[in-house]
Amino acid sequence: MNFEPYPFERLRELIADILPKKKQIILTIGEPQFQTPDFIQEELKNYAPELRFYPKSSGEEYLKKAQIDFVKNRFDVSLESSELISTFGTREVLFNLPQFLLFDKVHPVIAHPNPFYQIYEGASVACRAKTIYMDLSESNDFKPFLTQQQRKQADLVILNSPNNPTGATLSLDELKVWVKWALEDDFILLNDECYSEIYQFSPPAGILQASLEAGNKEFKNILALNSISKRSSAPGLRSGFIAGDKNILGQYQKYRTYLGCAIPNPIQRASSKAWEDVVVSEEIRQKYVKNLQIAQELFPNTTIEPYTFYMWLKVGNDIDFTKKLYEQEGILVLPGSFLGRGGIGREYVRIALVYEEEIIRDSLVILSDFLCDYLKKGFDA
Image 1 (cartoon, rainbow, N blue to C red):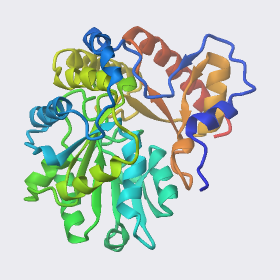
Image 2: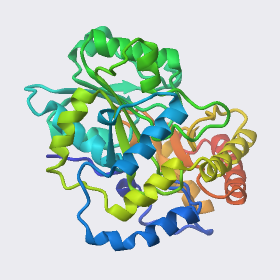
Image 3: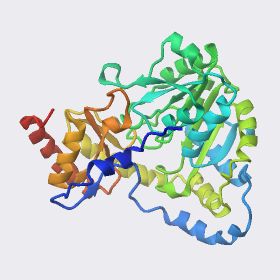
Image 4: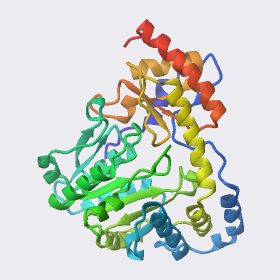
């Protein structure tokens, strides 16, 4: 298998010989820099003695119930127990689910957005699958699309709405179209919704909502993936779920018993409390709201979507900009070309707005001034 290096590995190589002139600030990774809520930490401590037990590969019912209740409260979708699996985060699902789904396909085909979260590509490599890249650009408002011919070829289509890195989000009506296509052209449709809880105004729609609205009440061919990481500032919990088509999930659960991805019991205890919480998670969301407002204020000519905590900033030459910004100002961003293929993303950098308000404002003021000078001087653009 020939896996491409991860974006952060490429970034380390890019800046290896650069000594920044100022104090470093890392705005590359979507890792919340707010403290994990105390009640989550306390729950982990309280149930540490349960480490003596083997965790069930299927997960405990109290965690599944908390996640089912979350789906009901957040998306107004009622799920049966057979329609949700608690998972050890979402990255493992994005990698191993395609292998489960496509193992008997002679010529498997996966479609996913471009730019993208690199685990999508890794799954394609592991499945020996042909990849159809759904290029996201200004010309299509960063919205994914497949022709009818491509839809008929695809076995699995991965959406990512709200999208990392662009922030573009599919409306309920747009998601309903994808549900219709999944049924008409018989492909599995998976929406990665890990940024669904970061929004400024109204919450974005989910694929399970769209499935119900489209009359697909059994969620045939439809799957949703979500995580506690951003919502509760707790990526270390590795708590996620996959929900939807119970016919797929029933067999996938059997497959998972062989993977060794069972969630340790103390983590399940803490995760269930996090999924049940509606107070602290809202406080965390409001922090991101303020950061998005700051970014929109300081970059009025850039479209900064009210979803996710990323800026997808057009700079001209992403590699040159990243190196010079880091050297001169100590601010490290992620080149967009590291997230895309075929030249997609090369004019952009991704900036993670994951610190407290004061740090974000100070960093973005510097970044805004630097970008103005950079574009005026025409550095290698």
